[in-house]
Each structure stands twice: as structure tokens, then as C-alpha cells.
Amino acid sequence: MEERKILVVEDETAQLNLLTRILEDAGYNVVGVKDGVEAREAYRRLNGEIDLVLSDVALPKFGGWTVYVMLRQINPDVKMILTSGYLDERVRADLIKGGVKDFIAKPYSAETIVGSVKQALTGQL
Image 1: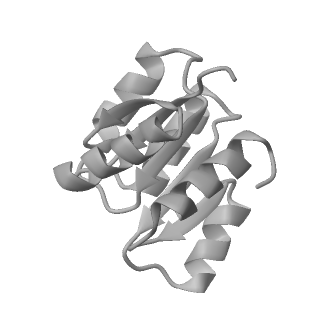
Image 2: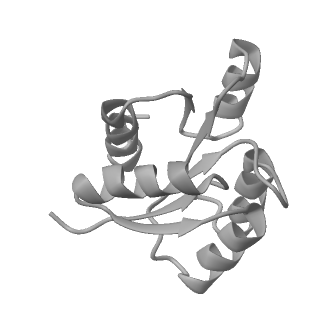
């Protein structure tokens, strides 16, 4: 299996470390950043190497949706999954209609994260 690279955007250090461990244990290469500015810079710097972005919605220096819009300007085919502690179903539906691959509510399990990532990478989402 080729190693897929995932950009994880999460401002809470403990959560970023947890997501990194979960995804690395599942065989993915993870690049972790703490805010929207770092996400845009990392995505540009890694020019075409990022297979998927997993981002919290509530971030300093640009929220998750704004990050998605910025990354789409770099790569219109960017694959992104958003997470949040709270988001109503209508907003979730709008995000997915807008092109986000999935939305995962917190708290989530390792199985949920890995399953959603696999589905997004294989085109099942």
C-alpha cells in the first residue's frame, strides 16, 4: 500500500497528537499544523503531496471552511474532512454540498476517523 499523506489542522495540542497517533497507527503519513495560516502554508509547500486534509471547524486565523476555500484555490480537487464539537445538520449538509467530503462530530472514535479517511481517499464519500 502506498503511503498517503494527511494534513491535520487542529489547534488543541492534545487533540492534534491524538489524531496524529490514530492516523499513523493506521498507516498514514501525517503533517500536523495548528491553524489556518499554517495549513495554507503547508499545503502550498507540499505542493501536490497532500492526499487529504482533516481539519477542525473552529480554528484561530481562519476557520475550517475558510481553510477549505483557500485550499481549493490552490487545488480545486482538494479532499477535506471537517470536525467540530457542535454543528447542526443543516450546516453539515451545506458543508458537504459545498464539496467537503465528510463532517465528523466530536467526540469521535479512532474507528470513525480512520473509516472516514479511508472512504474519502477511495472516493466512497
